[in-house]
Amino acid sequence: MIKGKKLYEGKAKIIYETKDKNLVIQHFKDDATAFNNLKKAKVEGKGVLNNRISEHILTCLSHCGIKTHLIKRLNMREQLIKKAEIFPVEFIVRNIATGSLTKRLGIPDGTHLEKPLLEYCYKKDELNDPLISREHIYSFGWATENEIKIIDNMTIRINDILTGMFRAVGIKLVDFKIEYGKSWNKDTEQKEIVLADEISPDTCRLWDVKTEKKLDKDRFRKDLGNIIQAYQEVARRLGIMPEETNISEVNFGRTIPIKFKKK
Ligand code: 5GP
Image 1 (cartoon, rainbow, N blue to C red):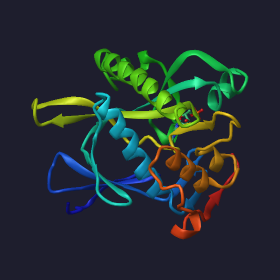
Image 2: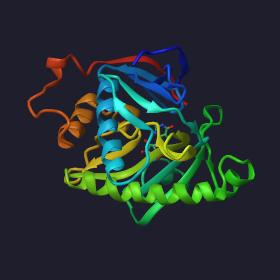
Image 3: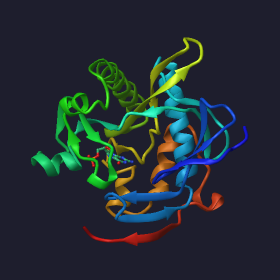
């Protein structure tokens, strides 16, 4: 697949065009950012791991009937995906209270929620991705009521599948963020809603069942160290990485700070 010109560069990924107008290439960078870009670093190997982990998760979801943008992984850092018009909304699912929920509402960290909590945030870096209600989404035409009904059902199903998948390997799925888009289905000749972006330790909170050790991007956000080792642990437990692979062999794991400003 020949890579065409760069269409978009985000914080962690780059999108390139292909010769097919309905397909693009998604490239995973090593860049890590937090607190809306105030904290930045290069974490060597992160892009490779997220590419593999996200491919594995989206493939499993697709086997369970979830429509996704993924066509196939092309190489260590790239995937061929369907081009999608992304809804400007981040869909967040919480099973355990932590992060911004505890800060916003004073709920004790680690509280198990009776049922998954769905939240919506407006995807707008300049505004810090603010929390919004469904009414905002309808009011500003970011998605229709019917689209949100479909997305909410997909999101709950994804949470069920992923909670089981991670539980089976000793990991609690605490919360995660997903994105959706509309892409062209060449069989039905219609646009359809697909799960887009990525699902990886960058977009989920993953805690070890026994020790509650964080195996996700909070290691970067909170300066806990061993970021790549944690991502590798997730990959190993999911059966993606051979047990014997160790970081030094693949020259992974160096974190190079780019900028750090306290808010
Ligand atoms: P919180 O709102 O507690 O900061 O995040 C809730 C969940 O959504 C966490 O798993 C977090 O990683 C994910 N999340 C929320 N916003 C973003 C974002 O802009 N980028 C990424 N990578 N993850 C996000």
